Image (cartoon, rainbow, N blue to C red):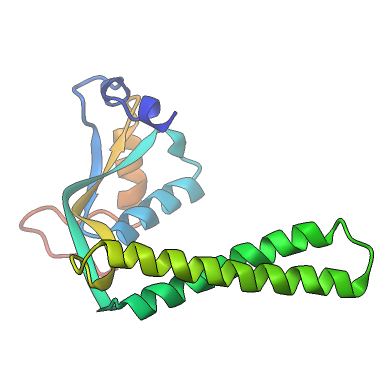
Length: 175
């Protein structure tokens, strides 16, 4: 399981303490590019972890939710489910018109039930959440951590490729 692989014991395997940070990045894309470069250089990326710190939840409000919109969204989901069930039942028929009737009936019945459930689910909230949104979790910093004493070799590869930040007081590198 994933939680077994990311247990605290996994981070204490390397000598010299629990964290062997290779580099820190201010964006996930830069951290991902560093791991990709290490992989391209033949480094054993199986010994690396990307650790996000300073997590923040960002919820972007995308619109207003009304009972009509909830019913329409439910109808769309129900129609897809009805289409799937109609296709599956259609596999068991031999006539062309029966097959089309099953698919059409499945879509119509699924859309109707989806609309009913979408309307009821939104009405049950009694206006406590009358908006739609998209949630995302972001980190302020991403640490590239190496296990098994391989941090120095990973750091050397990234330094050769210009992917390490300049030391404090030095002129910044052009990427």
